[in-house]
Length: 175
Length: 247
Image 1 (cartoon, each protein chain N blue to C red):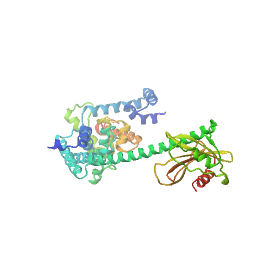
Image 2 (cartoon, chains in turn purple, orange):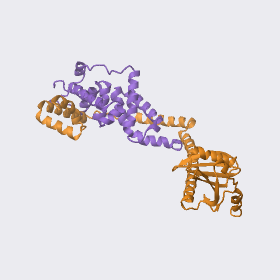
Image 3 (cartoon, each protein chain N blue to C red):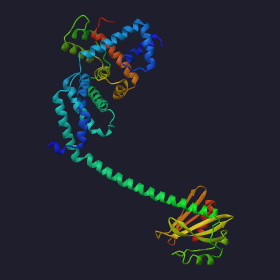
C-alpha cells in the first residue's frame, strides 16, 4: 500500500540519506550521551533533512545529513540545559569511574570500548563532535569545518585539545 | 618554523592535512626533536586505541524502522496538502510559459534586429553601388507613378525641399524578402533612405529609434505603411524629417 503511494522524492531521499543513519546515530549518540536523546535527535534530523531535501545540492549527502544531525543535537543540548561547553573536564572523577588504559594492563575488547566511549563523552560537546567526525567517521578537517560551520583552524585546535584531554583520561600517568 | 610552531602542526601532520612542503618541514623537525617525536608517538597511539577499541555506535534497528515510518507519514501529509511534485510540475509549466514568452520576445527582437541590419545594409549598398535611385527626380509626381505596376501598393511620395530635405528620387529594393519602395532624400549632403512597405498591423506607431554602426534608424507605421528611415544624419534631424514626412 505504501509502495503505491510512495513519492519519488521519498525514494530518492531514502536512497541518498538513509545509508548514513549509522553515522548520524553515532554522532548524535556521542553528542547527546544517551540512547533515547540520540534516537530522538536522529529522527528529528531525518524529518528536517527530508523537508530541506531540495536544498541538498547532491555533493556529499553524508556531510550534509550529519550537519543537520549536528545542529539538531546542539539545539537539543541547549534545550535540555545540557550544554556543558564551558564545563571543565573533571579528571579525577573520570579517573575513578574509568580505569585508565595502561600499556601494561590488557583489557578485553568490551571493556576497551566502554573506556574509550566514556573518555570521549567526558569531553566538551564541540570536542566530542570534532573527535567523533575525525577519528570515528574519517572526515577531513575541511569537511568537519563545513559540518560544524566554523573555520578549519578552529577544528584543528578543537581536535588537538580534545586529543590531549583524551590522552589524559585514558593514560593519566603519561604527561 | 621553530619548535613551538611545529608542535601545533603535529596533529594535522598525523591527520595528513598538511601540504607537501609543510609536511616535509615537520618531518625534518621531528627527526631532530625528541620532544615532538614523543608527542607524535602518543598521538598515533591514541588514534590506534580509538580505532581498535571500536567505540562507534550503530543505529538500533528500532530507530531505522521509526525513521522510515516517520518519513512516510511526513511524505503523505505534505504531499496531500502540499504536494511538492504538483508544485514542481506547476512551477515547471509556469517556467516553460515564461521561457516561451521570453524566447518569443527575443526572436521578435532579433527579427527586428536583423531587419534593422538589413535596412542599414540596403542603405550602405545604395550609396556604394551608385545605385541610389532608379528614378532620379525631385518631383514627387514623377517618382510616385514610376512605382505603378512595379509594386502592389501605392506609397505616399512627398518632396520636402522647402523644409531642407530635397527628394532625390526612388528605387525598388528588397527588405525582409519583399520588394519595397526606397525613397531617397538629402539633408546637407547626407543621404536618407526611406523604405516603405505595407504594414502587418493597421495601427499607427510613433517613430522608434535605433543606432547601429553609426547609422540612425527610425521605424514607424503610418496609414497602414511601415516606414524605415536610415541615415548617418543625427537623430534629432532624422526625427524632424520623419515628422515632416507623415505630416
